[in-house]
Length: 138
Image (cartoon, rainbow, N blue to C red; front, top):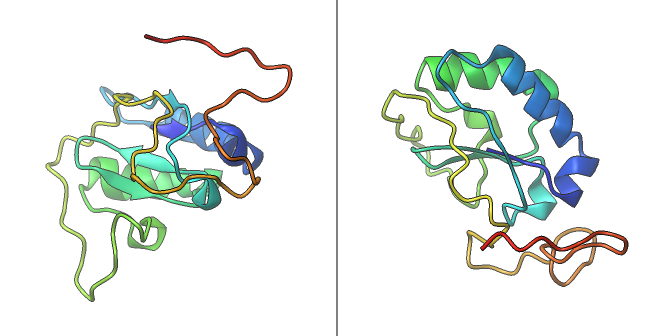
């Protein structure tokens, strides 16, 4: 999942999404998502089902994520989000090998349980901007 919400989008998440889709292994779904609740750390990429979170991902990181993680089942250490993968001196556990990237939770809900007011000073990053229309997905 690649966040495509305001802060991430301003930091080139559409290009990250395109780069990952261009080189994704056959059978791996690369999907966009709404806000993943990590506005100050974007662009954010979440790999499922192993719950690996990457932060500050750039388009030129796509090849490393695909080769090392999706194909090699080894997370890219330098891109791991420290909120979800605190460094304790040991390598992060490897995934289960299937490398799926699924768009299971694209609701825009805060997945961390913490304040996600974000870098742009908005009190709720899931609210539409002026001129945007809210869409009920329920």
